[in-house]
Image 1 (tube, one colour):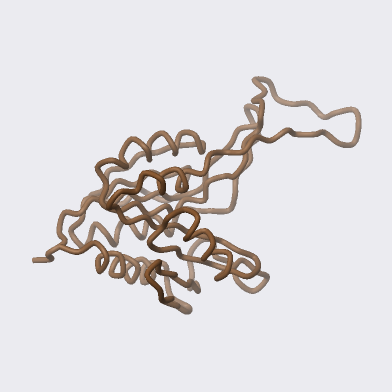
Image 2 (image 1 turned 180 degrees about the horizontal axis):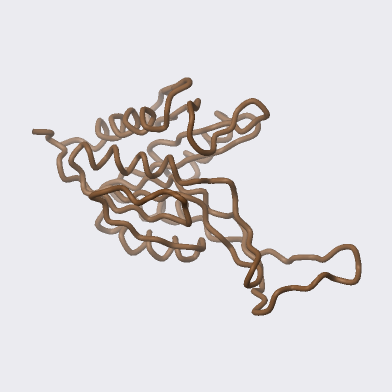
Length: 218
């Protein structure tokens, strides 16, 4: 029997959608596949899993508690709700950094001028907020960078009080979204970098859960 059987994993996945009006929104290209694979991998290892997911075309994994959300504020509410009982939080969701300052109840019509200004308001940094309430939990973040990926991810690891951060690079020849083989580097707070090259997200998830288990202890 696995000595870690029954640890409580709280995992986030997918994008958030920030409505502009009844028919338009701000979002990103995340499909949720990485978070869903992490939830499956943790479940297969015998852990209890809560998956908080933004809108995704994927079916919820079997055997996990599934909490659907839409906006960043929705996600913050649910993650904070379950965080107290978690042994590990993996924040794999691509939370929108900004939301419209004002939601228009009616569809915005074309403006007579060529340009329309949309005022944005910053969304809360969920993981940074939880890093200040960490206690003995394991905190895991994700970082998508276009330049200096390891340096920028390392800064986030320290500033948000994380134990691990996985970093992808988005470039012309590297698309981190969706399925297919991906490259990822996992930075550990205690030192060391695990580099995974051209692997499926299923394999990445399995290896990542193994690394986290080694830190959780019995």
